[in-house]
Amino acid sequence: YTRTGVGTSIAHGRETRTICGREYLFEAPLQADVALIRAHRGDALGNLTHRKTARNGNPVMATAADLVVAEVEHLVELGDIDADAVHTPGIYVDRIVQGMRYERRIEYRTVRPRGSRPRATKEANGMPKSGFNRNELVLIADPHYDRLIARLSLESEGYDVEVVNSLAAARRRAGEALPAVVVLDCEDCCLEGQALMRDLKCDPRTADIAVVALTACRGLDGACLALSAGCDRVMHKNQAVDLPRHMELLLRGPLG
Image (cartoon, rainbow, N blue to C red; front, side, top):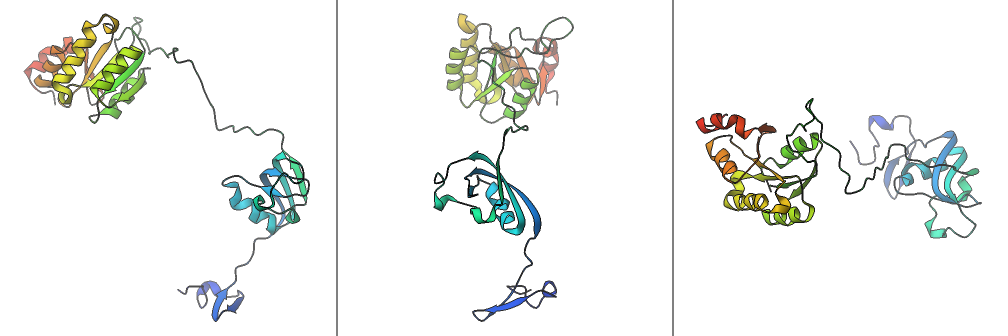
């Protein structure tokens, strides 16, 4: 290995030249018969400006081909392009054309009103899979435990999920947006979480909100805490636990 490649296997058959006392190895230049390049702006003399990553290969190929055809998005008048802003001088450009349509087919922008929400998938009896009667905004008031798992699980049921980092923010956001579901970490929120759930259930404006508790262990402590706070549902590792159906099992001890 040498700094300039001289004296190595890649130097075989290549031209070398000594510059300032150091020997350098010359690389063979790119060669092409025709180059089709794209530019953002261009004038009648062929001076071009490129945007972002288009500056990487287009100016180089313009100097390497015998015939260069440039397609520009905007064909401007002479003098509109500042000389210091030219990336490819017109001396390298033989033909210049203006493109007609520039649609990024890989990009699709979808916009829908804030009030319109996708409906949850329904079972054969017409009820949502989650058991909730409404399908609105979901707030996750859980700063650390299984937040991503709970979010993906609820989004798969058709809910719009929004993550908040504190119970105070959840309380404020619930009063503003009236979500259908509030998700709490029943083991980490403890007394403050119970107070928030009770407030949501007692307030007529938020009485219809379903409260979901996240628990790291589907045992006695988590279930009793959720039930005492008026929780409607317990989630454990992406699995929903129906409290009325599984209360007897929960009281026996951890389910694993």
